[in-house]
Length: 77
Image (cartoon, rainbow, N blue to C red):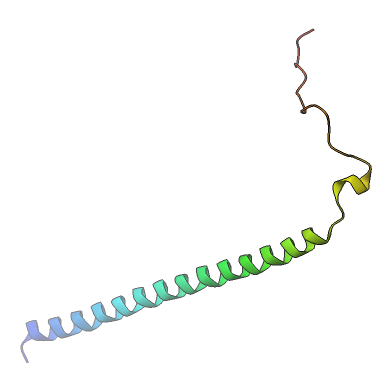
């Protein structure tokens, strides 16, 4: 075997290992993102169910205001 062939064989083996590594890292990151998104969706559904069970705001003694909430002028006499 010629030295150049030996270098090509070793280099291609290393390149293949690098490609496999990159593919595995990409697969793991996609899996983590998918798992996180699913967990957030489940949490949001649970919170929505709990929010629907809450009593209306009027049950706490505060109803709708007749006028919109405004901001006072700050620093203007």
